[in-house]
Length: 441
Image 1 (cartoon, one colour):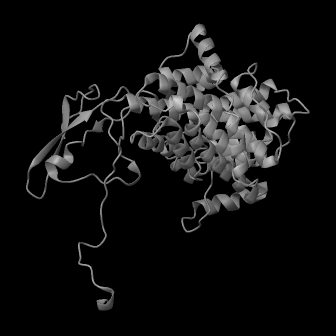
Image 2 (cartoon, one colour):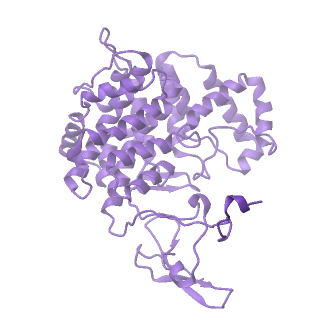
Image 3 (cartoon, helix red, strand yellow):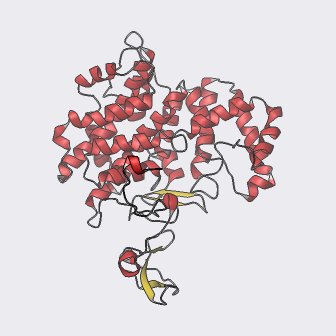
């Protein structure tokens, strides 16, 4: 292998040399470098030159695309949106600013922000016939099932924004999805309670409007606490995008076939529904409830270290972060603010903090760098705010929609993008003849 040098992606000056042990021939593969992160070996010509595919279950060592949106350095605990540290955005930015940043690459000026916010605000209502669509679901349907169905159905109502080759259609669809997702989520929640839907209000900001639709009723208004609104804003910002995770990759894969944007986002919601992805904060609450009391923490920590025990500490460690999750620090601070505002004496928070303290002082967890992640505290925050656990992943989908839309737009505009078509290592039977049923033994 040659010594790699920094080079612009797509214009490599160095290469990776492979020697085929079958025949001694060598293959030169370009090494590409981005602005941040590991260099990548361009294997696009590998099959043509060697007759071999790469084998990478879970794509843990494979770059599936080139992107300018989000960067994660898992070893250093860094998360950047278009180059901006997540901690700074969560502390200072409004959610609409972050949406604009993810979509267009730069933080907006005041005029740009005002225009963008107006465009989003005036797309928040749903087509009235969609209200009847909800009645087709059972009252006890999981809200994520409702979200999948309703978001997918948007393409049946908004035909004027499904032509993916038209930049204006893509822009309108992007605005509609960001604007309507909180409305759909709140309606799914209200439907599960048997309460009437609460329509969006144009005088409220994004986070406040979502909370108002969730908790107001026609007979009693809901005044949004500034502390809770700030907590919701932070939660939305922290979950807005996270590079090429399972749901984002699903959106890109669906979009690579030319599917309309509403179908692509519905596919992302379905992927997010999995407990290993969007359902992790709900799993943290269930774990804390199972532990139950402070004196049982050592028992469960011991079980977590036992490879023969199926118990796992939920909310610790991350597939990408090998250091502290930068979102977790913001979440911890927000958790204290919310509980202080509500005057809630939450035993689960005390249990969580003690579990965190013990785990971080344990050599096993320190050695393996199993630090708390963003899910460790977010479930407690949402629970304190009165949001049921069945809605946790729905709220995640609301926040992540802008990231999905930004990634989808980037993929559509990429001239090198092809329809996704992973290959496989086939281990089934070789070709064999058909045997008539009477002759089979």
